Image (cartoon, rainbow, N blue to C red; front, side, top):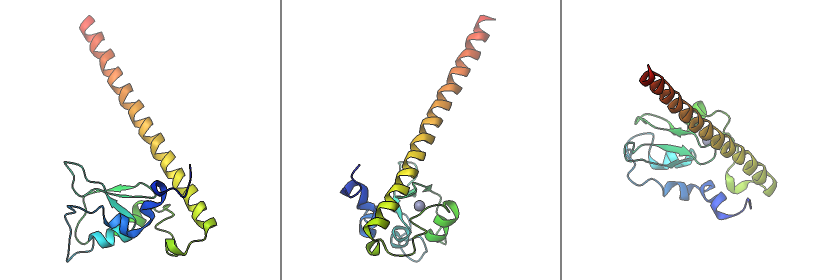
Length: 142
Ligand SMILES: [Zn+2]
């Protein structure tokens, strides 16, 4: 992986994150405006049923059920205390190349962890369905 490729760096930039907030339900007069959400590292990742899902581009933590008084930065820190992005002491633009590369490695760890958890969930679901089938077959044979 080339850590400097646009695909891997795009969402480090506030403007690119802000651009994802199309149809976000909280626009003004509240804490979780698109601006504050984007500042706190979140991108808007809505689904048909949930228009208010946001995910940190870095630690991939997804949060939904936002309330107008929610502070995106505080929510991010409390739900994902190990996120290196929300823990950054300086702006992305001021990072040295070395610091940036280190950050990218941490980001990759979050991605791998999420991919593993997704696989485990799929595996468990397949196991659950298989168990149900076995029970059903056993009952039919009774
Ligand atoms: Zn995060």
